[in-house]
Length: 340
Length: 104
Ligand code: SF4
Image: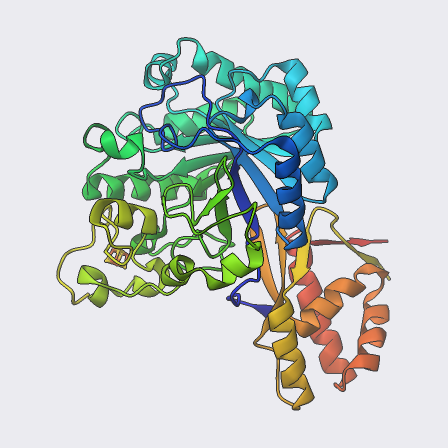
């Protein structure tokens, strides 16, 4: 009665929706800093949310930019949750005090992720370009928990934090976060410009994931999430995932502040616009999504025994660094002999 | 006997194309068990279920296992004992994942 794989879904399960691109921070790995600053008027956004709910989407995760800088965030979220959509958000936490937490709860937010790059305040503050931001991010977690909103910490793994897994876990436990998301470094936007300073070598990724997987299995009371398909190379898959390779374009879709739809936040290919296009149609007919769902092994992937699970790793990263979605993930530490 | 209740936090939807495909297969007298016709999603866990699984899921509304089996026997031509075993196994899996709760 339960199937191990899913057919092609008629609509995404989740939409990552960048409702604005304004930000009060200046992070070195930001992928959206150079994105459009055009934002949809509230009523147009409402119509788009109705469209998304009608298509059968389960949840909307607001991002940006910094969503709390959007003057109508609360109304928009309340409207979305009124349509039956589950509403969550990613924030840097700076503007999230006790009063705002109460308002977020009233607007229907069920979960909020706070971005924290290091367990060391100075390192985080320098990386984000704002003194005091670490303390406020941690305080935001407390405010959210006190009103009953589930919390997670989002950490983009890069050179400043890749060897501090234990410390990050300890920080997450101490501050009561339910989940710690280790996001793989994507090489998009400023992440690409700063790649040489921030990205790890394939061998360093291997070491990171080896350790992270051990911690993930042993830590209690915290869900450590690793969203990188190349962990298949260590014989692992994220439990609960029904799709192989990247989830982008298979379970989730990204919408930008001006309504443009892209497969994920890190692939800058516009496949439609939610204002004028039919979501289910784009989801079904987009040639770009089709290509992402039917990747073909090239180079060392061709002979790799993990291809079936890994599907060449992160499509966004392959595309950003090689121009070809089908290229092996540049983070892959698998050897170059196509005969494993 | 405990009654069975869906966890209200679980989001679920039927997939129209897959449902039509399963309907066609059943009409031809073929097995549609491999066709996932619906998805259930909660707290990062997703399940794909087939036509029969979805019918069971829809019946998890304050019924007992016997009540669910009795309903299904009206819809499907299957051995009662086999069905009961399958229904129990499926419900237990849903309960372990927190998708349903048993209430006395
Ligand atoms: S060689 Fe390709 S398929 Fe194999 S682990 Fe590396 S990226 Fe994945």
